[in-house]
Image (cartoon, rainbow, N blue to C red):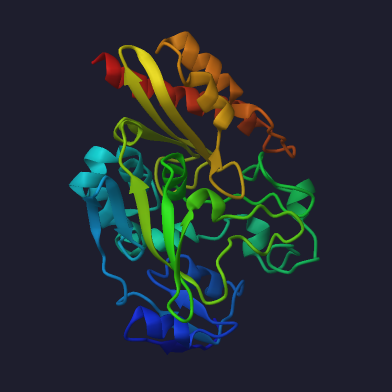
Length: 328
């Protein structure tokens, strides 16, 4: 790993003002340090954010507020998160290992880089790592890669679990840029599809950081779940995952939220599935018919073709899991 200078600013304003092109911000470091050790990234300066943001977790005015530096473990264990936003807690508890969850942060989860082997092995070309060099995954080992949102330049997947739950629950982000100017942005607008610029993954501006995450409280959030299908029971990334929430009253589905993970360059919302659920009676047939639409628009690249059917079955399992609570 290349030598670097560690900068430890005293506040968020100083941190963003300190940033210059080529620098990296670090919080828990569970992903960044791996990338540095493998030579995927080699900053000469690293700016430590860990002491700067308050690690606040609270539900106020009908919204959950998460400080970006809250750890995965403390967020998952917080009673308000467990009771009012169970999909968030479940997604975090199915991520990585207890050791990583004690270090990894909410903001870091949102910005985790892809686990595509071609991206992480500098012996291969990679358009995401070196724009214009090509994407060997298109005709290579693509079993774990995208069936939605890819293209001719990149089919890498976003690997984190938490953003899938946050996408389903309509989360928003507070971002702070150099100069201290802040803006609020819907998570759905935060990620970019690869298109012709696969190396640009988010709409973060130069030197900008995530400060907070906001999630509206709702009946959908309270009646939500997260299902993760993976190759082994722990410390494994999702082949397909699903975050699902249903608002049910008098046996009818008033609202529905469905998002997939492990299938796209960003957490992937499924509006067609949601539309097939809203206004319908809560029956097994309705849930299964809606889940069957989870593969609409998907395109496999060969080894990952199985994910299309797996997406349908994962959504069906998540929907039935939530529906069972309504009959208890």
